[in-house]
Length: 259
Image 1 (cartoon, rainbow, N blue to C red):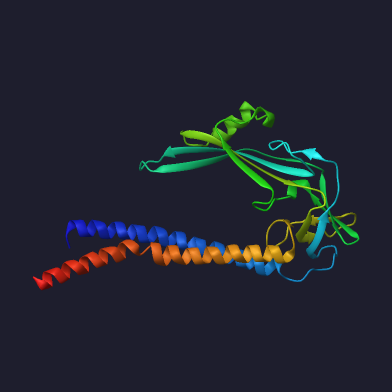
Image 2: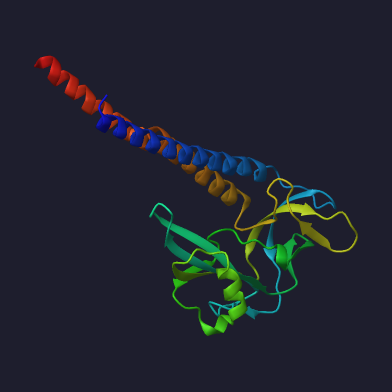
């Protein structure tokens, strides 16, 4: 085997390994989303203290606030401010670092969810907005003054980043009173208000704007999409250089045999 063929074979194997690993993790991610879909698709439960909750309800009314970034009136908002550094790594390849500047929430101390005649309460600090739900993301070179980010916050965020070209990412999610939601979680086993806590499987309280069926369809669609993409990446893209190299070697052998 010539040195050139050996080098090409090594590169092809490196390519195959990298894409096979990527496909494997995409497949795992899809399987996890499908497992979540099965978990949240179970029938709705009674609202009993200490029990898991699957319930459709409505976000209760409350005082209006203004979202810090979008300046949109709403019931509550979560604002994520991040910093991104783009640099060249030790192999002179492009790489990216992410740092958190601030994650803040505005709104009532508790988000109320009306389910029939009952009222569930979710502490605002436990509200994790679903990706894409009333979320706005923007990238910018400088942060607007209305966010009131301090020099100390920026210095702390930059402390562990590689030096490079930086930009900021701001993502903000809002929720309004009257929004129809599907809740997945567990009720705390104690007297007083019916307060929600994290679902033992999801590790969070799922507050999905929509119905149970819509959440299940969303999770299953994303899960199946990731699994298919993983198969394409792992079994299609990964072996491609090896296949091309094999065809080249086959053609060379055929030409030698003909000669």
